[in-house]
Image (cartoon, rainbow, N blue to C red; front, top):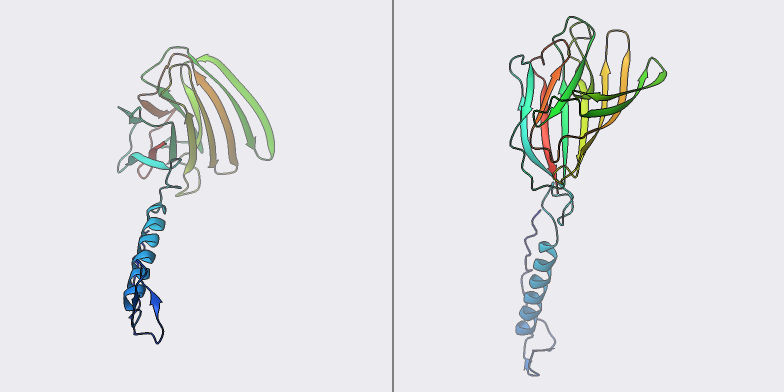
Length: 226
């Protein structure tokens, strides 16, 4: 956002205004110009305090794009490597579809190439009006959620939002995912929270499906949060 201060046209007033320093100017023009300069200076100070669009408030707390991937062909894995360690948190947003020959497919992720049994997660699922819970400990990946596949309504994509708080601090890495997906006969909504005990920091993320590929048009975007 930019403010461009402007000055109105000056006309000679019919009264006298004091000029800085104690003297007087017969027509007051000098005083008006001094006042206009002061207004411009004040507006500039205000302008400096107004954040640019998308900055989220100027002093921090805004999202900064790290990488955006839009698939033009099907692929088995979506990966983000060499993730900068300069942010406070990460947010991963996915809009995707699977090529599996079913109405849905399970999507998962791994951090830093870790495939050992160091992932624990719990899931709350809402399906067809029913609420269920499920957990898996000492497993080899973290669940992202469920994506629509071949027999799901044409053009639909599942959405996943993953938050990775304090990802660059030494210690086990935590995550929380919100996911929704429309199948051929049902709508699937899930919340998943988990931990990777072997990842001190998150430097890479890989995502994959249980059965199919990520279909063309799928998109994954990674942001850093200051």
